[in-house]
Image 1 (cartoon, one colour):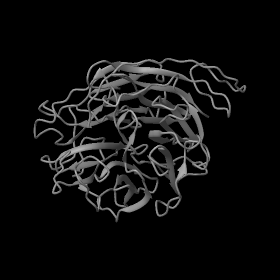
Image 2: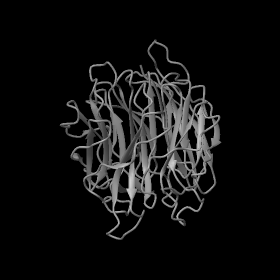
Image 3: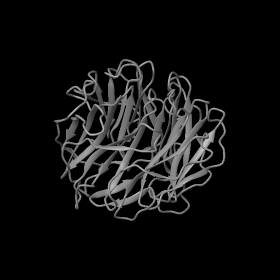
Image 4: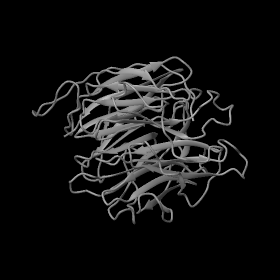
Length: 441
């Protein structure tokens, strides 16, 4: 859910010793010791809501086109690779109330999933959160339909959705949490993970089905079933990962989402999926699932990325586990951040470049400070997650404010070696969202 505050900073700069294969001014060109970075402020505000919880997507057929969104209803469009942005707002009779997830298909259609608020009376009306809405644009964001949604129990509350679009298809996969009553402390009120699929570009949806074997509470905490993300792998299998009771769960469907197997615990998550980090009102460690769909040496490998406090409450770290047997078994957690122990890294998000199989993870990092000052880092792996190079991508640190809603997630998109992370910056009561122009071949 959401509330907010805003403003910002940041542009860029760079100095580099680089090897002579052409590094140009507005990219990171990888070498083990030298990178050039430009950070771009997409949006900022001093109003009470947003921007935060940004989502971003590079067009799979034209990397000059980048789209993004932030709460409550912002849409951002760039046609120069993310250097400049146009800003607009989504409208729908279903209401547009945050948790933006933005994705594109191979025809450059844009899909924007969000929470519902049909009466405009958030938290005060029974229709608030009565469904998850997906709006679609077929003209690069100039116009949008009113939105479609899977059939679900509209008396309950629907929150924390995510989308996945398999390459070259009209399919749209969506998973989310259904609450009997959001934020209820009544032990009779329960939460569960739902899934739906569209095979016609989000025109229609399969009825929502509950896929989690265990139900959680409705408090929106460690004992709530939350943070569900779907993927579809090359063999047609669909997987959904989520967090519950300090564990990361995985479920699998082999028939297009009609039926589901027994939930499998693939990793522990010490500290739970919502843990304390100084100056952050709440911090989630959503488990991000993806797979390598490239033709590289790690093709078919599945990855899960998350944050937890297995090394102590003063040492939040970023982790990755991998499976090379279609999710049957998983590696021990691999630590992604490469600093000495004792500092916080949090709010990670991952994408796997479908052209190379390289793994990219963006996260907040406090390795350089003894207080709440925060940098933004990119970690990337070219060897299937065995090792990671860590690179600071923010120009200067910021210090968040516990009393200002900071959001639950960031995002990152990678296509053909072009990488665009997106993150929130907080300074006092002001929020802003930023990206970095990165290229790694």
